[in-house]
Amino acid sequence: MLKLYSWNVNGIRAVTKKGLFQPFLDQEQPDILCLQEIKATPEQIDFDIDGYDAFWYPAKKPGYSGTAILSRQAPLQIIDGFPQDIIKRFKLSGDSYGDPNQEGRVITAEFDKFWLVTVYTPNAKEDLSRIPLRHKHWDPAFLAYCQQLEKTKSVVFCGDLNVAHTEDDLANPGPNRGKKGFTDEERAGFQAFVDAGFVDTFRMFKQGNGYYSWWSHFAKSRERNVGWRIDYVLVSGNLRDRVKAADIHPKAMGSDHCPVSVTLDV
Image (cartoon, rainbow, N blue to C red; front, side):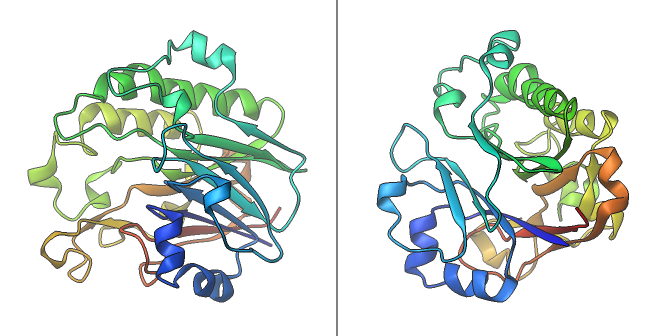
């Protein structure tokens, strides 16, 4: 069995300085840990992760974005970012905020039986000014990339997708409808993954609301569990029967997000 965890740490240095990263590793013992929003370069990360190979893909902009994969099993290869053919095909050159290809948002590891992709999807912004990038470029490009990988092996992808898919994925769907993270465009981007055959692993085991992976810092949202489920693990349809468990870990502190996990028989 393989235990895969995904966690938007909102700054790996901040989590380690709080003394919360190593205890999480010790307790959960993930075989693979995918991280988003590391906000650091390898040179700035001054802790030793015994037993793991670590692959960091930081943003060009200091202290911003970035992803990483920590694995007990050495991958066959690591791919940083999207391939050029996907970037060109979907005109993924950026917007007024910058070039998402320079923000360390996608890292891929190839293993014997599957591809693993972790992603930190661009935020739509409060004024929805990054919706065009998301809807017309990023989400279609990411789906096409995963489908391209699927031609050779099954795909597992995980990360902070910055969208609540359904009304069950946030505590207050009514007042948030049409706002960032819960627009029709972002939700359609997620639905496209499902329509393409990818399986939202958590929903294989639990239905309904109350299961969240991100909480605002305001009004004791986490204590009251007024949150959003925006962190996911999805798998190719042919891996559905190999998914043995999927969970959310709200007791793991250190970030405004909590880890999500899946156990695979691969």
